[in-house]
Amino acid sequence: MGTRDAGELVDSAAARLSVLDHGFTVADGVFETLKATPAGAFALTRHLRRLAVSAGALGLEAPDDEVVRSAVRAVLEANRDGIGDLARLRITYTAGTGPLGSDRGESRPTLVVAVAPAQPWPVTTSAATVPWVRNERSALAGVKSTSYAENVIALRRAHDAGASEAILANTRGELCEGTGTNVFVVVDSRVLTPPTSSGCLPGITRELVLEWFGAEECDLPMSVLDEADEVFLTSSTRDVHPVVRLDDRNWTAVGPVSTRLQAEFGARAARVIDP
Image 1 (cartoon, helix red, strand yellow):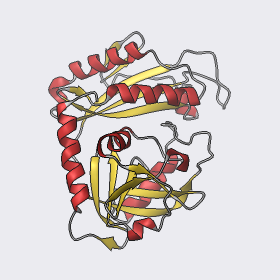
Image 2: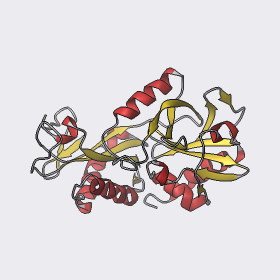
Image 3: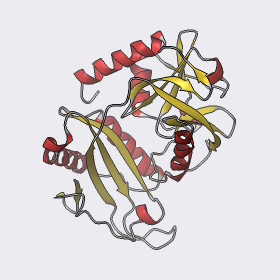
Image 4: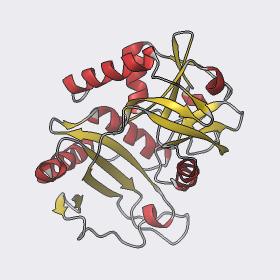
């Protein structure tokens, strides 16, 4: 179920957007995906902060914080019985209706909040590197844009390789990110992740791992994936997700650092819904 107009709740089957919405015609929009539990939407304040930054990068006026919070509360409450203990909440914000081209019109932006039940990820996961790269100099670098076609292609390649996520380098050949995740490596007990200057998205779970556990930002070559003691992914739906297979490399067990961070992150996230 989502919202439209002045906070109206509608069933997903009845929800309608104009075929001229710029989010549809040219992917002129931004979004956030959050984990939702019976306690509410996790890290909502951080997600709304990033949503505003992403909107600004596209030249859009930031959505009204309280309007979005109100919509999130309404959607979660209306769907409480249907989403169970875990759900995926999505906030989408576009430039609204516009011409059939890159120029924008004068319409007000479109805001949609939607939720659906989710299943927990397995305890461990697999990943595959792909031949395409992130452009760290792109106008969309670090922006949670609705322009996700590159991710769709890369993720399909990973799925064809039997992996749950694709990992990309940037144009400099450095480790960047996954299609919907940030990448961490453990080297000599140091927990490292690419800086945002690599072109990666400033992920919310990434941010929390940096703050809570003393992880470090560091420029990393792609070859670090062949040498790291441990590799794990982070995202708002995965939390800390240890990788046990990466291309042809296999780990016989989850490493001690990934094991500890996965457990500690889960415990802290369960205690505080909006850290």
